[in-house]
Image 1 (cartoon, rainbow, N blue to C red):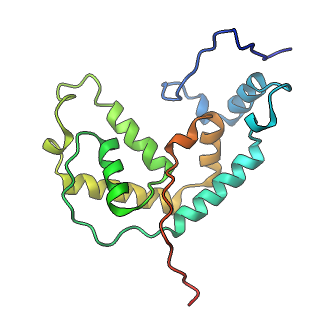
Image 2: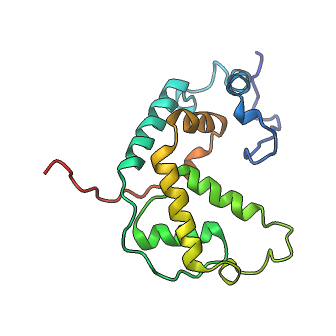
Length: 176
């Protein structure tokens, strides 16, 4: 059976952080899926494009209605962008958008090999500016991201859910 892999075979797994641009080409993603997903896989392992698209649409619609915190101004010590984002989530009880979480991971990865790689970020970048930067990026992702784009990324990364926060703040009922 073409594309089938037995449990004894070794398979190269990529986190999607490589410099290849295959994730930008939907045809390549579909080709990859056809070569990777086999008929004998359990249904729970398969996410159809339609179900991922629906999930991405619901996710983006939800993130659009989650208000950004208005009371800010805490000085949060941090050593990495991912660490600052985690502290902000905990402090404000707010999820950060999938794309923001991925962006924070990318910002940390570009420091690898730099002269100040081991220097805590809060000694390089003012903590208030760093927090404001994350909230600005978050606002852009919440209000302007396409669910089609998010779905394409999710289809290309079977582990996408690790970047989706499981924080659900209470939303104000606007129908009063």
